[in-house]
Image (cartoon, rainbow, N blue to C red):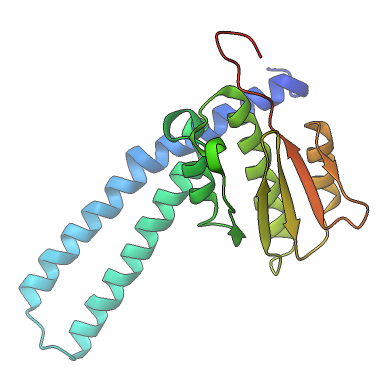
Length: 193
């Protein structure tokens, strides 16, 4: 049995996320696409009059299918531990913003970063915002970026578990608990900071 503490726990967590992302991409996404094709065949065979009960039912199914497909796509990207290395920090934050009401702010040059430090900062940001929103569904967020950190400004106080996560990552939480700062290490160039 693997060690469930510290860095081993984080490694297993990342593996779980990768497994979920693969399953969403390889199994659920294609199944939704197949359902869309089947729905198109049903729609063609029905040839329902516009405005009829059958036409409205097909339209409702198509809308639900489109929403489900988009949700699966978003979950696939947000769960993918290789999202930042593949697409960059800006794209990763944009996918996260589809799940959490967050104004991503202007990332500037940080947005292009794909290095391990940017990946680590995004992992903390993802966990913090998703859990914070789960605990406080009314919460809204603004991200303020600097060269070495991202500050989360929230409409609701930081939950204790999020404060602990941010602190363990080297970040800080304000006294009023309405802001949390996640550090972003300098990008390593040629193996050096």
